[in-house]
Amino acid sequence: MDIRISDATSGKNLHIGFTAGLSVECAFFPPEGDVALVDILPEIFTISNELIGQALSQAGAEGLRLSCDRGCVSCCYQLIVMSDHEALLLAHIVSLMEPNEQARIKGALKSMLQVLEQNGLLAELIDSHANCFSDSDRLVEMQKKYWELQLPCPFLVDRLCSIYQFRPLVCRQYIVSSPSSCCAQIFKPDNSVKKIPLLYDVASAVASFNGVAAKPTLAVPIPAILLVNGLLESFPRPKSNAEEMIAAFLAHLEQNFTRSATSK
Image (cartoon, rainbow, N blue to C red; front, side):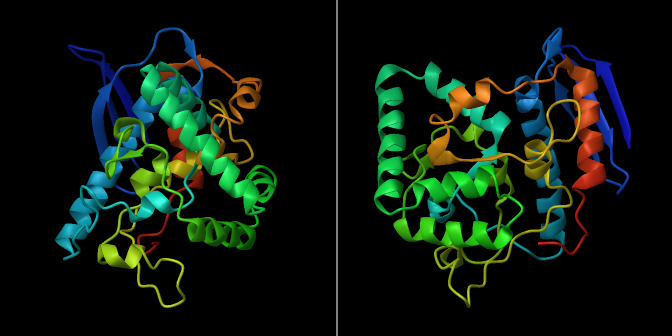
Protein backbone atom coordinates (compact mmCIF):
# COMPACT_ATOMS: atom_id res chain seq x y z
CA MET A 1 0.00 0.00 0.00
CA ASP A 2 1.24 3.44 -0.96
CA ILE A 3 0.02 6.34 1.23
CA ARG A 4 1.05 9.89 0.44
CA ILE A 5 -0.13 13.03 2.24
CA SER A 6 0.81 16.37 0.73
CA ASP A 7 -0.05 20.00 1.40
CA ALA A 8 -2.94 21.52 -0.53
CA THR A 9 -4.39 25.00 -0.84
CA SER A 10 -6.87 24.03 1.85
CA GLY A 11 -5.91 21.22 4.22
CA LYS A 12 -3.96 18.34 2.72
CA ASN A 13 -4.29 15.93 -0.16
CA LEU A 14 -4.45 12.21 0.64
CA HIS A 15 -3.42 9.67 -1.98
CA ILE A 16 -3.91 5.95 -1.29
CA GLY A 17 -2.67 3.25 -3.62
CA PHE A 18 -4.17 -0.05 -2.49
CA THR A 19 -2.35 -3.30 -3.21
CA ALA A 20 -5.40 -4.57 -5.11
CA GLY A 21 -4.88 -1.82 -7.68
CA LEU A 22 -7.46 0.69 -6.53
CA SER A 23 -6.34 4.28 -6.11
CA VAL A 24 -8.11 6.89 -3.99
CA GLU A 25 -7.34 10.58 -3.84
CA CYS A 26 -9.28 12.98 -1.65
CA ALA A 27 -9.04 16.12 0.45
CA PHE A 28 -7.82 15.54 4.00
CA PHE A 29 -8.35 17.98 6.86
CA PRO A 30 -6.51 16.42 9.81
CA PRO A 31 -7.08 17.96 13.25
CA GLU A 32 -3.94 19.30 14.88
CA GLY A 33 -2.19 17.48 17.71
CA ASP A 34 -2.98 13.98 18.94
CA VAL A 35 -6.46 12.73 18.14
CA ALA A 36 -8.70 9.73 18.81
CA LEU A 37 -10.26 7.72 15.98
CA VAL A 38 -13.62 9.44 16.42
CA ASP A 39 -11.91 12.73 15.48
CA ILE A 40 -10.95 11.47 12.02
CA LEU A 41 -14.20 9.68 11.19
CA PRO A 42 -15.08 12.38 8.61
CA GLU A 43 -11.88 11.49 6.73
CA ILE A 44 -12.70 7.77 6.96
CA PHE A 45 -16.21 8.48 5.67
CA THR A 46 -14.67 10.28 2.70
CA ILE A 47 -12.38 7.34 1.94
CA SER A 48 -15.33 4.96 2.20
CA ASN A 49 -17.37 7.11 -0.17
CA GLU A 50 -14.55 7.08 -2.72
CA LEU A 51 -14.21 3.28 -2.54
CA ILE A 52 -17.96 2.86 -2.89
CA GLY A 53 -17.98 5.23 -5.86
CA GLN A 54 -15.39 3.08 -7.60
CA ALA A 55 -17.40 -0.07 -6.83
CA LEU A 56 -20.48 1.54 -8.38
CA SER A 57 -18.52 2.52 -11.49
CA GLN A 58 -17.28 -1.06 -11.85
CA ALA A 59 -20.77 -2.44 -11.32
CA GLY A 60 -22.13 -0.06 -13.97
CA ALA A 61 -19.49 -1.24 -16.43
CA GLU A 62 -20.71 -4.80 -15.80
CA GLY A 63 -24.31 -3.86 -16.48
CA LEU A 64 -25.49 -3.61 -12.87
CA ARG A 65 -27.62 -0.65 -11.83
CA LEU A 66 -27.85 0.81 -8.34
CA SER A 67 -31.43 0.42 -7.09
CA CYS A 68 -31.04 2.58 -3.97
CA ASP A 69 -32.65 5.95 -4.58
CA ARG A 70 -33.84 9.01 -2.70
CA GLY A 71 -36.90 8.09 -0.64
CA CYS A 72 -36.19 4.34 -0.66
CA VAL A 73 -36.23 3.49 3.06
CA SER A 74 -36.59 -0.30 3.42
CA CYS A 75 -33.09 -0.63 4.87
CA CYS A 76 -33.95 2.05 7.46
CA TYR A 77 -36.11 -0.54 9.23
CA GLN A 78 -33.30 -3.05 9.55
CA LEU A 79 -31.21 -3.31 12.72
CA ILE A 80 -28.52 -0.70 12.12
CA VAL A 81 -25.30 -1.25 14.06
CA MET A 82 -22.15 0.80 14.12
CA SER A 83 -18.72 0.95 15.69
CA ASP A 84 -18.30 2.45 19.15
CA HIS A 85 -16.52 5.40 17.49
CA GLU A 86 -19.53 6.14 15.27
CA ALA A 87 -21.87 5.81 18.25
CA LEU A 88 -19.87 8.46 20.10
CA LEU A 89 -20.01 10.73 17.06
CA LEU A 90 -23.78 10.33 16.66
CA ALA A 91 -24.37 10.96 20.36
CA HIS A 92 -22.33 14.16 20.01
CA ILE A 93 -24.28 15.20 16.91
CA VAL A 94 -27.56 14.71 18.78
CA SER A 95 -26.24 16.92 21.59
CA LEU A 96 -25.64 19.73 19.05
CA MET A 97 -29.12 19.60 17.52
CA GLU A 98 -31.63 22.34 18.09
CA PRO A 99 -33.86 21.59 21.11
CA ASN A 100 -36.99 20.38 19.29
CA GLU A 101 -35.09 17.96 17.04
CA GLN A 102 -32.97 16.77 19.93
CA ALA A 103 -36.12 16.06 21.94
CA ARG A 104 -37.64 14.21 18.97
CA ILE A 105 -34.58 12.00 18.55
CA LYS A 106 -34.36 11.23 22.25
CA GLY A 107 -38.08 10.47 22.34
CA ALA A 108 -37.79 8.14 19.34
CA LEU A 109 -34.84 6.30 20.90
CA LYS A 110 -36.67 5.95 24.20
CA SER A 111 -39.72 4.58 22.39
CA MET A 112 -37.58 2.05 20.52
CA LEU A 113 -36.03 0.81 23.76
CA GLN A 114 -39.48 0.47 25.32
CA VAL A 115 -40.79 -1.56 22.38
CA LEU A 116 -37.75 -3.81 22.50
CA GLU A 117 -38.16 -4.34 26.25
CA GLN A 118 -41.88 -5.02 25.91
CA ASN A 119 -41.08 -7.71 23.35
CA GLY A 120 -38.36 -9.24 25.52
CA LEU A 121 -35.57 -8.27 23.12
CA LEU A 122 -33.68 -5.42 24.79
CA ALA A 123 -31.32 -7.50 26.93
CA GLU A 124 -30.71 -9.89 24.03
CA LEU A 125 -30.01 -6.99 21.67
CA ILE A 126 -27.33 -5.54 23.92
CA ASP A 127 -25.75 -8.83 24.99
CA SER A 128 -25.59 -10.29 21.48
CA HIS A 129 -23.74 -7.26 20.16
CA ALA A 130 -21.56 -6.42 23.15
CA ASN A 131 -20.51 -9.94 24.13
CA CYS A 132 -21.27 -12.40 21.32
CA PHE A 133 -20.57 -10.53 18.10
CA SER A 134 -18.74 -13.54 16.64
CA ASP A 135 -21.93 -15.65 16.89
CA SER A 136 -23.36 -14.92 13.45
CA ASP A 137 -26.38 -17.19 13.87
CA ARG A 138 -27.41 -15.38 17.04
CA LEU A 139 -26.97 -12.00 15.37
CA VAL A 140 -29.06 -12.97 12.34
CA GLU A 141 -31.82 -14.25 14.59
CA MET A 142 -31.76 -10.94 16.46
CA GLN A 143 -31.92 -9.05 13.17
CA LYS A 144 -34.97 -11.04 12.09
CA LYS A 145 -36.81 -10.39 15.35
CA TYR A 146 -35.96 -6.68 15.14
CA TRP A 147 -37.17 -6.51 11.54
CA GLU A 148 -40.53 -7.95 12.53
CA LEU A 149 -41.07 -4.97 14.85
CA GLN A 150 -40.67 -2.55 11.89
CA LEU A 151 -39.00 0.15 13.96
CA PRO A 152 -37.90 3.05 11.74
CA CYS A 153 -34.46 4.55 12.25
CA PRO A 154 -34.85 7.55 14.61
CA PHE A 155 -32.97 9.71 12.11
CA LEU A 156 -35.47 8.98 9.33
CA VAL A 157 -37.54 12.13 8.68
CA ASP A 158 -40.04 12.39 5.81
CA ARG A 159 -38.45 9.33 4.17
CA LEU A 160 -35.01 10.99 4.20
CA CYS A 161 -31.93 10.52 6.41
CA SER A 162 -31.55 13.61 8.62
CA ILE A 163 -27.88 12.81 9.35
CA TYR A 164 -26.91 11.70 5.85
CA GLN A 165 -23.43 13.26 5.99
CA PHE A 166 -22.68 11.35 9.21
CA ARG A 167 -24.68 8.16 8.58
CA PRO A 168 -23.03 4.93 9.78
CA LEU A 169 -20.65 3.06 7.50
CA VAL A 170 -22.98 0.04 7.34
CA CYS A 171 -25.63 2.31 5.81
CA ARG A 172 -23.15 3.57 3.21
CA GLN A 173 -22.11 0.02 2.35
CA TYR A 174 -25.64 -1.33 1.92
CA ILE A 175 -26.05 -0.83 -1.82
CA VAL A 176 -28.05 -3.18 -4.01
CA SER A 177 -28.70 -3.86 -7.69
CA SER A 178 -31.87 -5.91 -7.11
CA PRO A 179 -35.27 -4.16 -7.21
CA SER A 180 -35.93 -2.11 -4.09
CA SER A 181 -38.99 -4.27 -3.39
CA CYS A 182 -36.63 -7.17 -2.62
CA CYS A 183 -35.25 -5.32 0.41
CA ALA A 184 -38.72 -5.33 1.95
CA GLN A 185 -38.61 -9.14 1.81
CA ILE A 186 -35.05 -9.49 3.02
CA PHE A 187 -35.68 -12.09 5.74
CA LYS A 188 -37.92 -14.33 3.66
CA PRO A 189 -36.25 -17.63 2.65
CA ASP A 190 -36.54 -16.91 -1.07
CA ASN A 191 -35.41 -13.27 -0.94
CA SER A 192 -33.35 -12.16 -3.93
CA VAL A 193 -31.47 -9.16 -2.58
CA LYS A 194 -28.27 -8.66 -4.59
CA LYS A 195 -25.67 -6.42 -3.01
CA ILE A 196 -23.11 -4.65 -5.14
CA PRO A 197 -19.74 -6.12 -4.08
CA LEU A 198 -17.27 -3.94 -2.21
CA LEU A 199 -13.61 -4.83 -2.13
CA TYR A 200 -13.03 -3.28 1.31
CA ASP A 201 -15.23 -3.60 4.41
CA VAL A 202 -14.53 -0.24 6.02
CA ALA A 203 -17.35 -0.61 8.57
CA SER A 204 -15.88 -3.77 10.09
CA ALA A 205 -12.39 -2.31 10.03
CA VAL A 206 -13.49 0.73 12.07
CA ALA A 207 -15.38 -1.45 14.57
CA SER A 208 -12.25 -3.52 15.23
CA PHE A 209 -9.67 -0.73 15.50
CA ASN A 210 -8.96 1.47 18.53
CA GLY A 211 -7.03 4.17 16.69
CA VAL A 212 -3.61 2.58 17.05
CA ALA A 213 -4.10 -1.18 16.74
CA ALA A 214 -6.68 -3.91 16.26
CA LYS A 215 -9.17 -4.57 19.06
CA PRO A 216 -12.11 -6.93 19.62
CA THR A 217 -15.05 -5.82 17.50
CA LEU A 218 -17.54 -3.65 19.39
CA ALA A 219 -20.84 -2.97 17.66
CA VAL A 220 -23.51 -0.63 19.01
CA PRO A 221 -27.14 -1.06 17.84
CA ILE A 222 -28.67 2.29 16.94
CA PRO A 223 -31.41 2.17 19.63
CA ALA A 224 -28.67 2.07 22.28
CA ILE A 225 -26.44 4.95 21.15
CA LEU A 226 -27.50 7.26 23.98
CA LEU A 227 -28.01 4.42 26.46
CA VAL A 228 -24.36 3.37 26.22
CA ASN A 229 -22.83 6.79 25.54
CA GLY A 230 -21.58 7.28 29.11
CA LEU A 231 -20.09 3.80 29.11
CA LEU A 232 -18.30 4.36 25.82
CA GLU A 233 -16.86 7.66 27.07
CA SER A 234 -15.09 5.75 29.85
CA PHE A 235 -13.26 3.41 27.44
CA PRO A 236 -9.59 4.20 26.78
CA ARG A 237 -9.14 6.06 23.49
CA PRO A 238 -5.56 5.70 22.22
CA LYS A 239 -4.32 8.81 20.47
CA SER A 240 -1.71 9.75 17.91
CA ASN A 241 -1.39 12.40 15.25
CA ALA A 242 -3.99 12.19 12.48
CA GLU A 243 -1.61 11.25 9.67
CA GLU A 244 -0.14 8.32 11.60
CA MET A 245 -3.60 7.16 12.63
CA ILE A 246 -4.94 7.22 9.07
CA ALA A 247 -1.95 5.21 7.87
CA ALA A 248 -2.36 2.64 10.66
CA PHE A 249 -6.09 2.33 9.99
CA LEU A 250 -5.59 1.84 6.25
CA ALA A 251 -3.02 -0.89 6.90
CA HIS A 252 -5.53 -2.57 9.25
CA LEU A 253 -8.24 -2.29 6.59
CA GLU A 254 -6.17 -3.78 3.81
CA GLN A 255 -4.64 -6.54 5.91
CA ASN A 256 -7.84 -7.74 7.57
CA PHE A 257 -10.87 -6.55 5.61
CA THR A 258 -10.14 -7.03 1.92
CA ARG A 259 -12.86 -9.08 0.26
CA SER A 260 -12.55 -11.23 -2.83
CA ALA A 261 -13.78 -9.73 -6.05
CA THR A 262 -16.82 -12.03 -5.98
CA SER A 263 -17.88 -11.28 -2.38
CA LYS A 264 -21.34 -9.85 -1.92
